[in-house]
Amino acid sequence: MITLSKTKKALEAAEDKAKELGINISTVIVDDHGSIVGSSRMDGSIPISPQFAYTKAFTSANLGFATKDLGPFTNENKPYFGINTLFGGELTTIAGGIPVVIGNKLCGGVGVGGSQDTMQDHECSQAAVDVLTS
Image 1 (cartoon, rainbow, N blue to C red):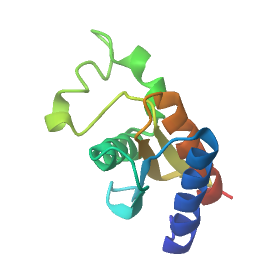
Image 2 (cartoon, rainbow, N blue to C red):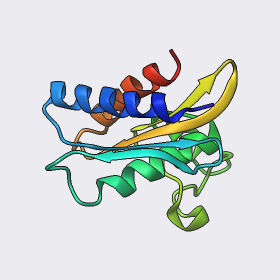
Image 3 (cartoon, helix red, strand yellow):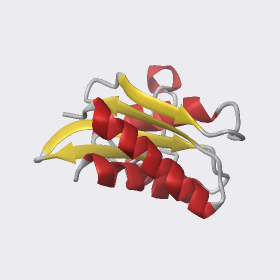
């Protein structure tokens, strides 16, 4: 289970990583149903970054994959072909979403949006996941 207490610490960890990288981000943490447990938006982050973050978190929480790893499964005749247009755009393959697995159970997801380099989003998400799974 993702607790509010750990969520607050995880949001701070993501922001600390963003500061280290010199970027401004939004972070969203969702439970295993895709419902928001907590979110934050750093001053100076792009206005659409919270939506990017939510979509990445939602995707990871529901599919159990890091969004950066979905690419090979989205080609024609693969299980997630057309994922970007299914469900009205609620799913994405853009890096920055990571599932939260605690005790071999998928408990939710973390999504980060805001960097022009989405691998930096992924790094910030990982910092949050590390807190949630410790």
